[in-house]
Amino acid sequence: MNCRARRRLQLSAEAQAEVVRVEQIWSELREAHANEGAFLFGRFSIADCMYAPMVMRFHTYQITLSAPAKAYMDSLIAHPAVQLWLAAARIETEVLPAYELGEQIGLYAASPELHPFLNKSALNARF
Image 1 (spheres, rainbow, N blue to C red):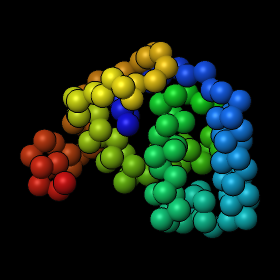
Image 2: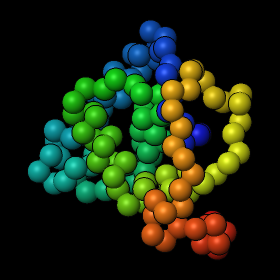
Image 3: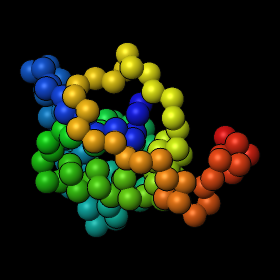
């Protein structure tokens, strides 16, 4: 997944129905755990890790979400672990054209300064 890109994609009716289904799941969990934190079960958990790739796809493809789903997405993107993932992704230069769907409308510049602990040698040591 190219986390550097911002793309525009026309969703099929089936894909839009799936977005609505995911929004419903997120909204129900957020409502049930709203007093415990900003994540699905209040505190950051493995459930948030599971949904992180979907959040990044929604973000990359500029999918319009309900206000509660957008708030959850923003909270997850702001989490330090996700910020580290994004920083690593943004210095990756390989692009797989077969997986670049939709029209590109923007691209984040490669910037290792996005995270204070990230540079190419640190990435090689960590991953």
